[in-house]
Picture 1: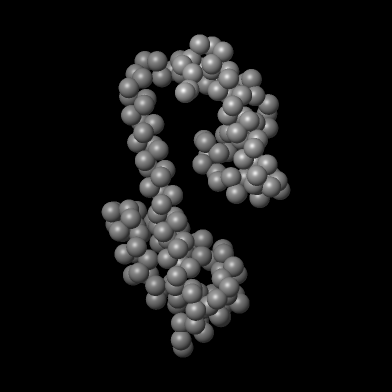
Picture 2 (picture 1 turned 135 degrees about the horizontal axis):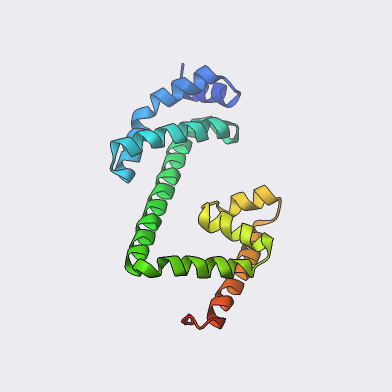
Length: 173
């Protein structure tokens, strides 16, 4: 059976067709993940995550002929997210190591500044920056337009920044 026919069946809900396609493209997905992540373990984990994401989103495929491209795009997006997250974690570790003892005080100042925000703003900042939820996903979760979420996020950050400036922190240029 052709890959296009398998893709059509998978889109209609045929799990066997979906599994056959995933086995067909497993090597391509692995090579893509490995080229981004440079680790066998991370690449295998990426394949698992992409399989899950593809299974959940199979109904969104508009053209069965582009199923392979769709899978690879999911893999690339996942790998880029992993890389961004790992870069952010490395940067946070460096910042914490530089701060040394003052780390605890910085945390307390941040907690105090967050208390000056509304519960809505705190939850928004927590989702975006501590849980790494995308703005698009927050908008869907709260049934609010993305532009509104961006505006409210910007306002919350501005309020938070103003709170630090009032306490004598260095002003941003």
